[in-house]
Amino acid sequence: ASARDESLDLKVKQKIHVVGIGGPGMSAVATVLAEMGHQVSGSDIHDSEMIQRLIKLGITINIGHDPAVVKNCDFVTGSPAIAMTNIEYQRARQSGIRVLTRAETLAAICRCATSIGVAGTHGKTTTSSMLATILLGAGKDPSYLIGGDVVAFSRGATWTNSELLVVEADESDGTHAQLPLAATILTNVDVDHLDHFKTQSAIEESFRDYTKNISGPRVLCQDDRVCASIAKACEAITYSVNPGSDANFVATDVQFKNAGATFKVVQNIGSRKVELGLVGLPQRGIHNVSNALGAITMAMQFGVAFDHAADSLSRFGGVARRFDVQGIEGGATFVDDYAHLPNEIAAVLTGARDESDKWSRVVAVFQPNRFNRMSVMSHLYADAFVNADLVIITDIYSSGTRPIAGVTGELVVDAIRKSHPESKVVYLANRADLVEFLANEIKSGDLCISMGCGDIATLPREVISRRRGLSK
Image (cartoon, rainbow, N blue to C red; front, side, top):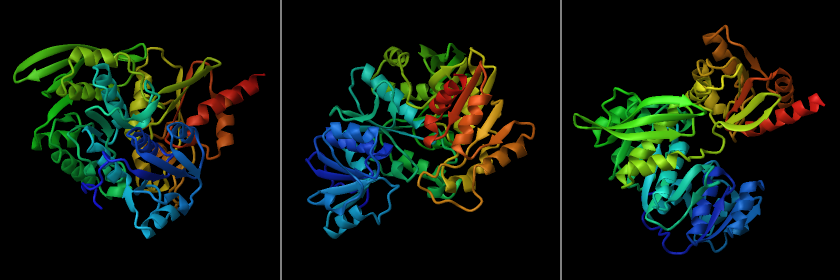
């Protein structure tokens, strides 16, 4: 079945089974399906905090995979990470039960509302969270389906049955092209997910097609080369953080202080410049100014006044694992961040350097992710760490990908050393060695920021507890 197949009608109650329900993508979909009133069951190989949350929503969950669980279902869906040879999928097909991809299920959800997609290589989660926050503040009570947990909502998805749905449109498996959307924000188009697309030009083409197929407002970041060229080719509303830009909405007078940002928004209407007002954002970094401007621009297309949008963003709590201060111990600050692509890492470290409370050193720890990604992309990390005083690279977190001979975290170390021979880079493959090294190395006044999308998230707490053990 193609995702444009209109026959799946989620306005009618269904019995649905979700394979791999504990992951971030499927747990969000399952939450929405349950809140829509469907009878949802799921399976996952691990119990987790997320599984417990889903059980509280009335979802029946089986730990482990068992083909009997699909009995009497209307359809079965699951994560793109799970092979179609999974025994639950196989039993469903043998029993004549439809098996839908995550994209197809998401498309069916999108058809139940006026859906606004947020797409792009970086900034999707933050921008969709900002947009949902603004729409909520304006009394529009949107449903949302976002990849990460939004701090203010302490969850990444909900179904409110109102007119609007904010959805993160992920390009990693081509999902974005399959969603029936009324509007979209496109933040940027960069090299990622090469395992799905093979070439940069294929990625660009997929975003062109995606944008062209959307009927309503298309809000594109003019600072990105590809977005700017797509904006020229189709009717689009543009935004920019370059003060001299001729985009429709421009951020000017950007300032970073007290761990946040302030900026003015100017609207270019023909040759007239109209100053809309000031935005105070509790997040640092020019990338967050850009994300906020994209969210404001889209909200205004749906009738939200600029002042309301700015007011909501002044209280924006951010997204879990985005410059998340995990603790301050012995005068050192420990931060966790989900950044895992070269541009994201560079942006986070630049943001750390913009800080008013100047750190004596910025120590960056990076856990590379996926063997296939690192085999083709490790060289792109060469310049990502220029704003760190000391860089520690760990071994690769597999994310379910198969090891490749010769592909280790050392490829990233080599890339950095080749480009910046003077830089201080340490390779520590073993977690215990890493914790021990950091516990001894980090001094008062340092910022230790660990980045990656694997199990690196728990590192700050491991280091803090080891330091407390050492100081006794």
